[in-house]
Every structure is written in C-alpha cells, then in structure tokens.
Image 1 (cartoon, rainbow, N blue to C red):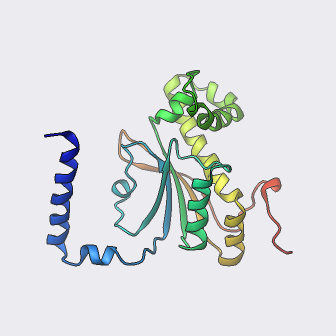
Image 2 (cartoon, rainbow, N blue to C red; image 1 turned 180 degrees about the horizontal axis):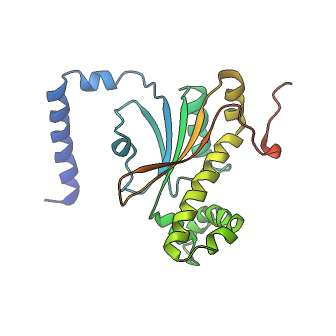
Length: 211
C-alpha cells in the first residue's frame, strides 16, 4: 500500500469513531466557528495544537509557520491575527514555540539555505539582541533552548505592538496575549509570558487612537 493511502484509511476510521460517539458530531462542528483562542505555532509535525491542548474542533483558530514567527511584513500572519481579533473576537492569542525547534537550530548556524535565510534572519535578530545572555550559557543545547524561549517572548510582544491589537484593547479589553513553549521531550506546556489588555508597550510601538 502506498504510504499516503494510509492517511485516507485513517480518516475513515476516525470518522466512524466520531460518529459512534455522537451522530451529530460533524453537523455540530460544521456550524459557524466561534473560537476563543488564536494559536500561532510552529509548522513542526510533532507539535499538533489540538492534540497537546486537548482542544475540540472549533476551539482553536490556528496559524503555523517555521518557528512560530510574527513578522510585520508577513501579510499571511497579519491577516490571520487581524481576522481573529476583529471578526472572531478571540479572547486569547497564544504564541507557542517548542524545544528542539529546527528553525531555531538552523538560525543559530551559518548554513546557507537560500530564500529560507530571509525568514530565519528574524530569529538571528532575536539572537543578536540577547547574544550576551545566550552565549553565557554552558552548552549549545541550553543556548538553543533559551533562544526558543526568547523568540517566543519576542513574538508575543510583536502581537502587542500591532495597531489592531491595541485598538481592540481600547475598545473591547481583549485579547490577552500568551507566550508558551512546548517541551517535546515531556509533552508539557510551559507558560513564559502573559500580556494583558491595556499593558504598556515600548513607546515607539504605541498608537494614539484619540484622533
């Protein structure tokens, strides 16, 4: 059997399992989505958002990319965040990285990967800002783990820097922004940072909506 056909067979078994539990499972989940959470995670196949959080269909609005980045020139992630805030009215935005991230590991190297270099450059910038702290750690694995954490914190702060996040804070007092790290070795989620509505942001990134 060709490998991909296994996925189709798994789907049939999954459908049967869900219908056995509840006949209206799919008709209910097909209704209009009203998720409370936006999840921005890594594309890594070992970090399935719904599985590690125990979320049901309709609970998470999900965006994934290499190393869970929020880049202000990436209209894909910006569109997802704006839609989540202004249309879905999510209460929480979670940026979740993970230890053992290949994007982080590659960004710490000097490998030339062509156009991917431009994406990983943003991680290198985080490294540069925190180089003293990272290089003060005793080995490469600890340095990599710390860069994973610092990158998550930076991306969470970038969510707070967005004008539509700040506008929603002012008018709706949401969303709360979280930065988490998933430990692929233990299965645990670690809470690194929480940014509540109305939190102060670095002055240059703050917007004045009074006009």
